[in-house]
Length: 320
Image (tube, rainbow, N blue to C red; front, side, top):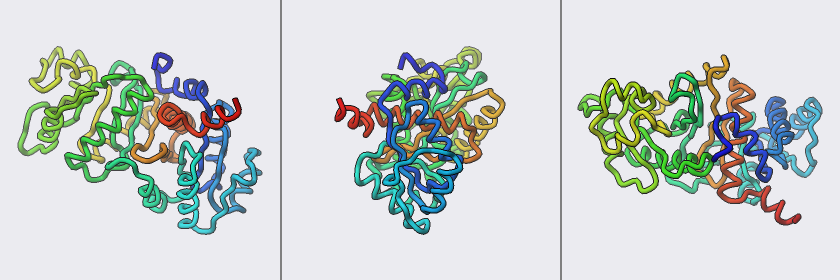
């Protein structure tokens, strides 16, 4: 959208929409409560629901000094019960965002799969970094969810990322680069074959090109020096990709971790959303900076409000 020129702009953009309702799976962690309280201060979050051990949640609430309605504490004993309580809260309606708190990902994810509304779930990261693409906003996928990247899953990952680009950033026809180590078809490099086959598909709402190396995907000067590759949609995508689709989780995770390292030195900003569920799912690491965690919540809230109106919008309409 016109008001989002950098990743950090997501916070203000989310605050300008109706506030969202979040359920925290494992709501007894102090840093998570400080995060959602800050998001509430920014107008991103309104209602906060905490699932987990009641005593642990109450201790964290007291330490942070946050105000939580007692009915919004979903007491549950044991990790499996906390995961079940989170799932039932979402199924009951009125939830815009699921935030993974202290509950272990291997415990929560199988429950979240029961909320799947798409054939493939994938992590979409929105970032900006001065050395990449001239500092403009770029999306990448999938650094943390899809472990087996078949052709169909890769196609679904393109769809999921393009959806975020259109809904959150207003990119009507996002330019998608399927990354590899080379732009030519090499038999010993399967990602080149996959990239070409994906580029040859019919994509009505996106321009897809592959295989492309990272420099040919994001740097117009590299395209000028090396020449325009003879690939579908190269003239539209090469040098100007909006979305980077990595060929596997390993390469995506390396790129993601590089961005997180740059973020700690003020050289990059990034936010992530897990797509494919009935509501946005935010898996935030405690190692992430507060900025990354905040903009990730903002990203999820914007997507929720602009796709389904969100529980916050419904409550706003009810009060009007």
